[in-house]
Amino acid sequence: MKPGEIALSNYGYYSSTPSPVNRMMADFAIDFRDAIDINLGVGYVNEKTIPRKLISDAQKAVLSQPEKYRAALNYGGSKGSTNLIESIRQYHLCSGIGGIDEGILGGKEIIIGPSGATSLLDGISHILKPGIVITTDPIYYIYCDLLRRAGFQVMAVPEDCEGIRTDLLKSAIAGLGEAKGEIRFVYIVTVNNPTSTILSNDRRRELVRIVTELSGDLGRKIPIVFDKAYEDLIHDPLVEKPESGFLYDDIGIVYEIGTLSKVLAPALRIGYLIGAPGAFMRAMVQRTNDVGFSAPLITQEIASYIMDHHMTDQIERVRTGYGERAIVVREWIDEKLGAYLLDCRGGSAGFYYYLTFVEIRTDEKSRLYRFLSRTTGNPDIDGTPAEKKPRVVYLPGEFCVHPGGEMPEAGSRQMRLSYGFEELTRIEEALEYIREGVDYARNE
Image 1: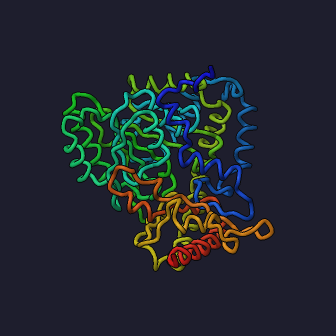
Image 2 (image 1 turned 60 degrees about the horizontal axis):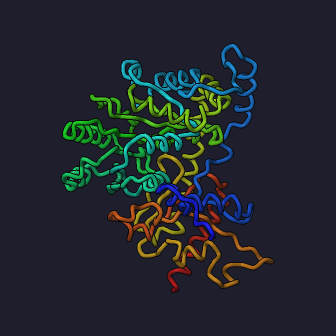
Image 3 (image 1 turned 120 degrees about the horizontal axis):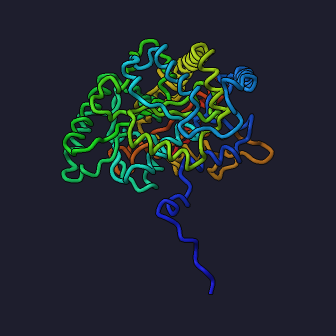
């Protein structure tokens, strides 16, 4: 008798089907044709923002100072490099990040994730009991997919120009009735991915107040996790300086996740979590130990060295570069696609624009998607082996909205475009192809 399939856990079963981002990353890595195809979808940072020489010099400095950077090529402690933790602490204090001072930060712990900020988010999904997670719609699709595979129920609340709508949040919580006892944590990306909407300070303050009251009602603390992945990349000088949720937290429920991937290099895999000491933070450190003992110590020490000596200048260079790109790309979007758009968000932080078309569909089955992926079946559009037509990779909005929320219809007309990875000439070329695709879709 032939044996059946391997018995998988629920997580394993749902993970056996690749998520949208998994498929996109795989396609980009395997099928992407350099100098032909154009990537506006996968959220890679711009190669020119990665300080290669600085990283090389930092590695040499680390290896030449074993008295400070002890055993840098060996295993590290699961909480993280003491050098890097202190560098992160001093960066926050000296740069006035979030408006917090030693009085606030002195009462918090800082821990380093095993492999970037994403690994910390994964850790949270393991150490908290499955239940309801509240987040913003459009959702951070990568983490919300993971949460669903891990057995959580995602409750997504629509945003406006200031971030998650707290009026709708209060209504949604009230609408849960007795089921509100299943709420496990609140997860907010402060510069939302995919929309790049910046959470206002008023909205941030109101969020902490709502979750504080909810914690009191339930008789237990409900963590509110602020993911600040793109906050260092606010490049619009007119945007108010973000305040830390710690400023409004009286009961120790706020946790902040930061990363150096966007301002130094993703390959360093440096993500960190700041929060009040306690069982939650101890469990997160143990999770790091379980999956790899620690983040690679050499990259932690490299990051520490750069933070101590070059961080201010590096962040300013990166912000300036993305800020200049945002202005140019927005002009091209308005010029080439403006007549067909209902809304265009982004351009003040990070490196995404989020477009909503009036009536053009963008999902994987749409004529626009098939035109840009060159899968229409028409050689004049798709190209031939002899005449390779460029493909344009974007993130369809259908992946970015909660399927059970209020926005699936809108999501079918939305797309996220990255102006981070490709050079400007290629981005302009891609927008021309998108315009051609819109014409193709309109002629259905």
